[in-house]
Length: 124
Image (cartoon, rainbow, N blue to C red):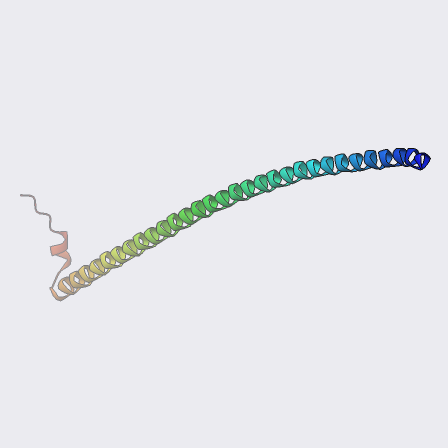
């Protein structure tokens, strides 16, 4: 019976060593898994930060484009209003000139004039 115990002891020692190695490997694998997960979380944080920066830049660009469009529209409206006012003023001035010329022609055409009266020079 003693012989069986002696032979069983080395096998039990090998089993214990194998179990210790398995536990150590499991611990190392768990530690590596934790490190990998920390790296994945850090990468996700970097991705979120990059997305936030891109989002902020996009909003700034949208704001600048909106301001530029509003300024261009205001300038175009002001230019159109100025052009319309100038055209109206020119039309009114031309209408006044035409009325004055027509009334002058009517006034002068109804007066009897002679060539002598047109050639008179007032020396005084």
